Image 1 (cartoon, rainbow, N blue to C red):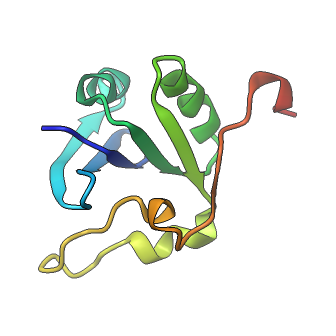
Image 2 (tube, rainbow, N blue to C red):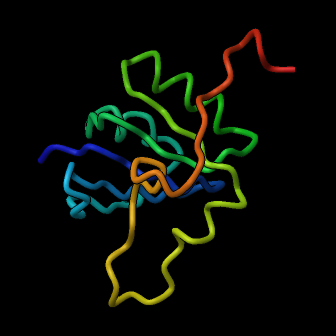
Length: 113
């Protein structure tokens, strides 16, 4: 299973991972605890990780970048369209890859205020 884009819903204790291949087909869904989060993502080895830009996202992004994973952060105002409440419809992943949502890179340590 090769994951092109891994969408991550960051939370306090349990993180949701949603992986898609190059064609956008869902190939992975899981919930992971805070303690196993980094190792789970490293094991999946996605090409790109997409997360909502929040207070911890830049720190996590730098951790992923240090092991060679590209990270894209999506502004919170653009995350709502990705939340699916109808479980019969497949979830979407990597909207910034399709060019429909602006995303940006993580801040480096020297950029953090």
